[in-house]
Length: 108
Image (cartoon, rainbow, N blue to C red; front, top):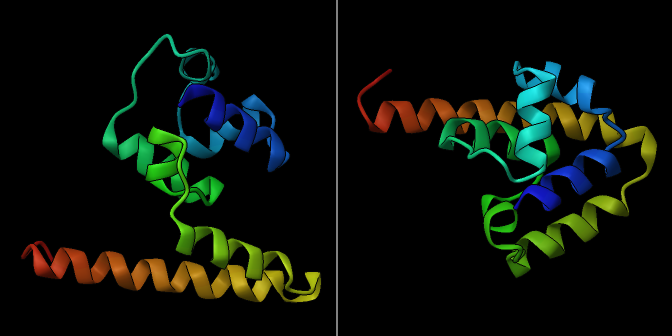
């Protein structure tokens, strides 16, 4: 798991310091996580997956679901000029999904 997080962070172009700041954790915690010397909470796992665009299945088990791989391949074919729009749309969909989940649990 730890090597998949580190590799994905590096592929996204984040330094350890930048990624730790985005996660709101210390650089030393992130370093320990990436070395496999500390565990990860579910909440932190979700933040990591969200920021890196990874599925929890992939981070935890090293396996991508086939639907994820197909979607990712489609995204890679999108012209760079549309990536900011795609990012905005995905962010809004995630916000809606979170609201729906909270509403289902009676927390909203």
